[in-house]
Length: 252
Image (cartoon, rainbow, N blue to C red; front, side):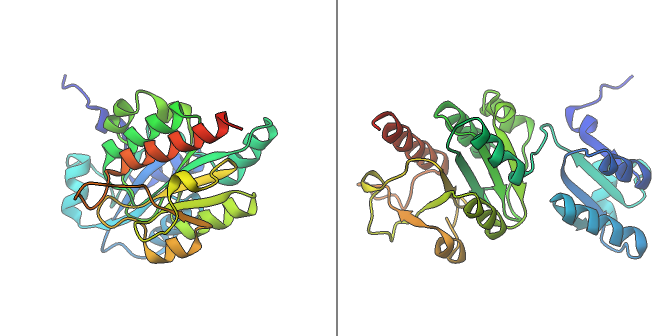
């Protein structure tokens, strides 16, 4: 008998099995739908994915065949998550109810799964409560992410939002300040008040924060740099920001 891989165990394929899993509240990293599929079923899947914040990707038949190893997928394959995602609007009140001020880290369109794991490790070590994955291009949480995080991804409250700006509205509605980084900022990280409740937002590895995201931040700070490299690795930048927040908390 052939051994089933970890990725096989996360796959759910076929129309009824995927719908049943959605009904049961199963967390998905992504759902793949045949690109030529139309009609009532396609609309129902789109509606459910939108309501539950699950990324939906339309792909050709050959992609679904490869994912399912030529099993009878009926035009749909779901990749189950190895963690349980949390509703952001339930996570934040829970933190306040414990008598703590939220410290949240948001990853906006960060694609490298190992960077996600490394950031999660620093976040949990330095006292963050939660992690938000936002944007349509954000990478999935894989076994590599979990390994690099040394289990931090199972200890943090992890939420996923398709829209970064929607996440901002929710955070600000709960009194949380949004802080981003920009090399164009005139304000250095170490000269800024970063005490929680606060959310630091980190942009993609290649382009940083989009201009529309920067404009919605309450504060943009710059990490001092001396070398000729254009920027720090995003997981290193996250560690520096989190350390400064912890330094300020300790010094209160």
